[in-house]
Image (cartoon, rainbow, N blue to C red):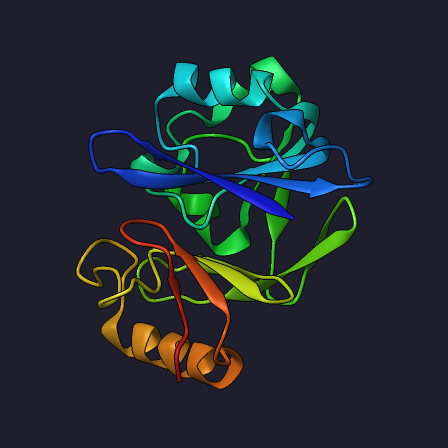
Length: 191
């Protein structure tokens, strides 16, 4: 699995282009072949499409870690260009102004190429915040950052739920796991 990070929109959201190769082709990102998913296309449609054009593969999914505009803004335009399915947690349904193709729940598995991502429901930032857990990596949206976690004072947020979600992640995240947050630096769990 290869991950390309694009920083998009005015709130500098980390949008991830994730490629799961079916067969080795080349070490350069632009020459990969396989299936793709996009996590949190929160703006900069043209930049995202330009990067996708460099990759030889099919975009299967657009996954939103939650429904805030800085994570979903380019959903519809990217879907129109790629035909990808939009996915978001079912608890976000009443907070969003678009129609997703699939509503996710805790424990769902998303297959991309030869990889599987497990959906972890981690409310606190919003009611339907999720993380996506792979074999040795995790996409955490606004649940977990290198030096903290997402706000809990916005509609749908809860400090109590955030603390429970962080406790859940603490049990799962082992040393060596790469963390891809919704904003800020990518980091590795040390201990």
